[in-house]
View 1 (cartoon, rainbow, N blue to C red):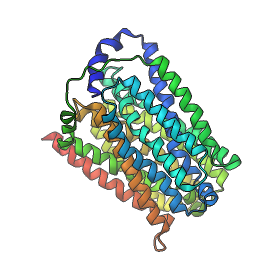
View 2 (view 1 turned 135 degrees about the vertical axis):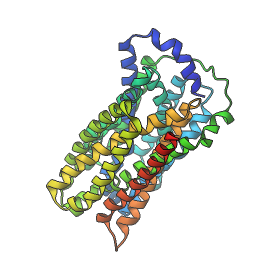
View 3 (view 1 turned 60 degrees about the horizontal axis):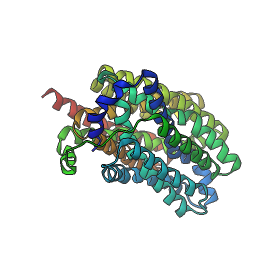
Length: 401
């Protein structure tokens, strides 16, 4: 499948200037901005959506879970279905599907329609990240792959800095439907950018579908997917319900929470950059250290979340640690899945969102529990991350042998 692109691009990319390659990666970055805003905007608007659609916070939280499950199913499925097309054609088709889903969300009159719209948009999300990862990383030298992915992924972190806070504010002032129209406009702009900036390559793969799916039989590939699921699952156990947590536990106003989400976005951008550099340096060692720091920060949040100052500091550190692991996890799966990198990257996107869905579901159960409640989601998230640490140690041990 997309290993065809890897074979083809080695002849085409070197002929292009460094500037044109940079603009091509920026086109992918704009796309990830739109995808990131669509995925995370609902988190800041959970109370508004729940009130307007007359559902509970936990039910509204399933809009996050449903989106993540859509990625889990859609990422490998659409990667397989579109395997005979050029990478550029696939990226454009996925953006068209994504736009359709967000148009439907922008006009959704009820909860079920909004959930369906989220799932449609999510189907395109994971496959786009899988193929986009291959496109971005194969434009550069092998020792710069993590940095190239981090550049592409900067769109997602910028969505947390700019898109989600501004979209949350817009949704609070003009209704929760309004940010989805902004996402539609961004996705159309991304569509045009990819049309003009990314060249078309031909399908030249001779490997069969069964051969590519054999990557799932590699122990290190499976461990890499589990590292992603649990390593990032703890993040969404907490982050899905960060708005009600900061309002009800810490005592911040909705406006203050919007500003804190901006700070989280700044931190996530720093973490993404740091993670990319660290992955190019010492991949597994850096990943292990980052996961340990993430678990400690999540556990401490149980205590620091009761004070406004310490809560803000913890949120900032949480953003850095959470997003530092993303480029590391993506490069790990590409390293261990030679011959089917796009399919592996799509599965990894699915693994990220399986962690997101599981974390959101688990957090919803904890938040709704009379015995535990919102305050417990932080230490429960830390426990999930510890499982990711143990899997990482197992994978490192296999590397040594």
